[in-house]
Length: 70
Image 1 (cartoon, helix red, strand yellow):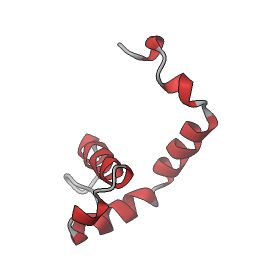
Image 2 (cartoon, rainbow, N blue to C red; image 1 turned 60 degrees about the horizontal axis):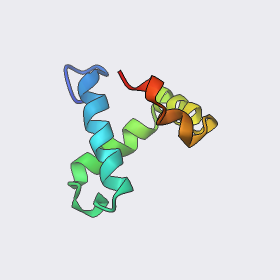
Image 3 (tube, rainbow, N blue to C red; image 1 turned 45 degrees about the vertical axis):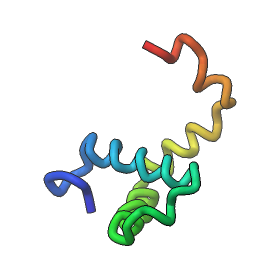
């Protein structure tokens, strides 16, 4: 399932980020059941898994350096 036009788009990235944020700040219980299922499916995508692995391979400081901000 994708959020828009039956294919993975920026909408999926935006909604996925909001769901990831909700989970990380303790608001997961307020996410509707339908979106919880969407979030579960999104996390199973190979691209999501690769992105999480790449993120984990970098030290946290690498994500907050001034050269990463445009």
